Length: 196
Image: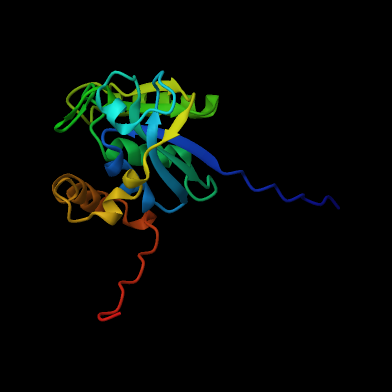
């Protein structure tokens, strides 16, 4: 009788994505089931350890990105990318809404040949489906380094839900995301009791 050896659990994976302001993208992935951690930061430029002020000049070559760790047994890299393409406009070069500059470019920094192939495949499929009126301009580039953004950028939407940008830009994006991906959201934390 042949015994079947259990397959080892797949290791956690990392994805690095830029889709405009990192506050927006981080807020989305914080709520996606299978995503274990999300950090805002910078990638794709030449300057080591850049500051937010330096990246904002557009001269460092860095993009505002999020780096997330996920469990591929729960959420696939393909699903991570499907969410990515649904929460920003991948057809505008170096711009998301009013945010303009190379630091706001749409970019996927792949960590493996499989991630590169998945990114290129989904871009081909989305372009063929003509979901947008223009071709996707998302850059697909090899991951080199990630520089964590300053502490005040981490969990920005969660900590500042009533700040102007959060209310006007991020909140509507989050509402659309939550509606579209209801089945894939992490369980909501219970609201604190009044007077607690």
